[in-house]
Structures are given as C-alpha cells and as structure tokens.
Length: 252
Image 1 (tube, rainbow, N blue to C red):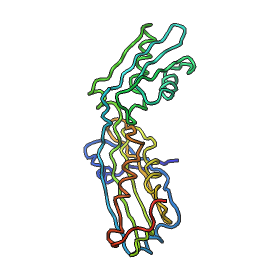
Image 2: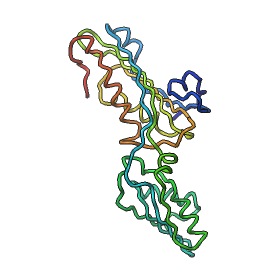
Image 3: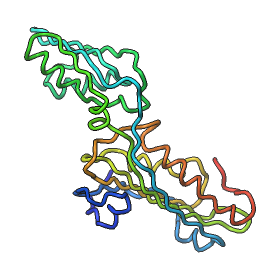
Image 4: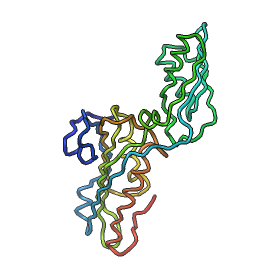
C-alpha cells in the first residue's frame, strides 16, 4: 500500500528537478524490522552517505514497432516487439473494449529490451487505426520518439545510514530512496525499499521509498524494476572500513 504526500521544494531539489513541475510524491509504507533507533544507539560507528543516479534509457538497438490487423468480425492480430505479449494482449484489449480472447498477439524476436519493452506504447493506436481503416497498420517509433516517449529508468536520490560496532557487527541500517517516476506513480518505490537490504541478515533495518512525480517521460524497468540502484548503493556504504575489520552481518 502507499500514501500520498506533498512533494516539498527541498525534496524535489534533491532529485535535481529545479525548473520542472512536480505535483506530488507517493510514499511506500515504511518497511521496518525491530528497533532501528535502538540499534543506532548500540553502534560505535555510524556511516551516512547520500547518492544520486540519473535517468538512463535501456538503449535497445531496435525501436518499438508493431503491425496490427483488426477484422470486420472483431477479431484482431498484433505482431509486436515485446518482452511480454500476454500483458500487451490484456492491456490493448482493455483500452479498445475488445474481448481478450479475440486478440492474438505474436511476439517477434527483439533487438534488445532490458525491461524497456514490457509496456504498451504505440500498439493500441495501431489497433484502433486498423479497426477504423479495415486494413493492417504498421507503426514504427523513431529513435527520437523512443527517447522522448518511452520509459527510461528512474532517477534516484538515496540516503543510507548504517551503524556498527568496532568488531564489524552491524547494529542498524536505514535507507531512504526517492524515485522519479514521470507523470504517473507506480511500483518503483515499493520495489526499491524491498530490495535495499534484502541480501543481509540485519536485526534492525528500515527502508522507506518515495515516488516523485515529475515532468518527464513515464519510467520503465531497466535490468529489474528499481533494483540496481537499491541493491548497489546501500552495499556501497560499508561502515566496517572505518572499523578496520570485516562485517559479521553479511548476506544471509
């Protein structure tokens, strides 16, 4: 579950969005295990780091393309470059008011995807045009269309706080993750918060994710939704370097 909160100018500035409009932010419910504050009180060292990553497009060689054909009896066929043809069939049928059983989707071999070809883009338009014209319709997005209109990964701002004892035992870990998500909220904050410390067996841990609505294209997955930044950056904040020893609370 999530809740809506007001995006403050300071929060928006953290994401480097000065000059762009942002109506609101969506916060995932905090993921909390045991007592984080008590864990930090036990720590002999506390390391805090802040990280930022920019939006990155998946960079597939082949742009989005499709061929749609809708027949007079209401059945339709769609040939498309996609990583998820069942998702395309369901969403296109819902948008066009078609019976899902009457739409056949054939997924072709694709010239790269990396998570960026799991969302519909031009396909419902091609189906609607074919239904109107009574002829097959082919649509191919230009490279400019792809960069402007399809989903790059989210830009992020991540704060990490980890406490440890001198022997390297981690007593508490905390992460705040902010994901830009274009004009629509989604699942990015929730998945990022779930991922942040998932590999570690910490007694006291908290992760909170925020989705920041921005005047940018809709975001999409890139090598797993939200996961690369959430997994890499907390793991790049090792307090045991200050302790001069190895951590005893490693991956579970």
